[in-house]
Image 1 (cartoon, rainbow, N blue to C red):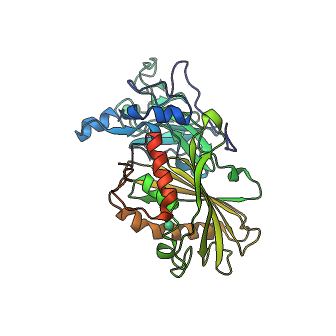
Image 2 (image 1 turned 30 degrees about the horizontal axis):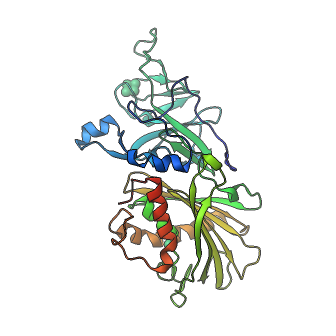
Length: 394
Ligand code: FES
Ligand SMILES: [Fe+2]
C-alpha cells in the first residue's frame, strides 16, 4: 500500500493507544473515499489544543477532520539530523521533530507536560529528549523516565509527551495528527530510478492550501504571470482538454481524485534545458485534497520527461507552506539551478495567491465566474465538496 514510498517509521504504540488521539476525538473512520465523504456532516469538530483556546479566548476552533487524518509534509528529511530538535507547525499545532539514534523520525507536541516549555529548546540525548527547563527526560514512547529534581522516584504515568504519527517519504518528513486513513499520497514517478529527484521549497504563502493547489492546476495564467518562461502573451488560448476521475490504484485504501489529460500549452522556456519554445503536453493528477502532480512532455525535447508534485502543508487555514518535488531527466543542471527555476516560478505566483478574495475557494456557483479553461479547477472543487473538505473552502 506504500506505492514507492521511502518507508519510515510509524511509531510503536502502547496497546490501545494511538498517537495524536485526544479525548473526545471521534473515532471509527475507516480508509477509503466513501468513508470520508460519508463522514462529511461530522467533519467540523472541536479538537484544538485546550491551551490555544484558553489563551486566545476564541470560540472553539474548527478543524478539518479530512486534513487532520491525512498526511502532510513538515520538514526536509535530509536536514533532520540526530542531534538537533526541530520545531515545525501543522494545522495550528506546534510540533517538535527529532530523529533517534536508529534513524527513526518522531513528531511530538512541542510542549513539555511539566510546565509547558517548548521541548524544541531541549536536546536529544541518545534515545531520549531532555527538556531545557527542569531536565525531564522522555523516552521514544514519550514517557518521562527521569525527573532530575526527584531522581529516585518513578515519574507518574501522566508525565507523557503527546505524540503524532511520523514517516519519511519523497525526501520529506510527513506527519498525521489524527488517525491516518491512508498512506502519504502516491507519487510513482519518484520511484523511477531513471528520474532525478530534487526537493524544492518550502515556500510560505499567506493563502489557503486549496488556492495554492488550484493555481497549480491553472494553465490560463501562464502567459500572464509566467510570461516568457511557462507562457507567452501571444499564445494564451487553452485548447480543450479531458477531465475525469482518477483512481490512485490503492483500492479501498485509496482516494478517488481528478485527472486532466491532453492539456497542451505553448511555452518559451518550459525547463532549464529548453533551447527553443515548444508545445508541451501536460497531465495533472489531484491525488489528495492538498496534493497534485503534473507531468510535462515538450514536443521539441525528445527524451525529456518531468513530473512535479506539489504538496501543501497547512500551517493554518490561511497560511500554507508549499513543497515541490521534481522527478526529471535533466542530468545537466545543478540542484541549485533547478531549485532557482522553481523559486522563480513560485515567486511569480505569490502575489496573486495572496491577493485572492475570498481567501477560501468558493464551492458554490455564482461567487466566481468560471471560463472553459477552468474545467480542471471545477472538478477539483467538486472533489473537495464530495470529500467534505472544510478548511479553505466556502
Ligand atoms: S517544563 Fe520541561 S522539565 Fe519543567
Ligand atoms: Fe503559476
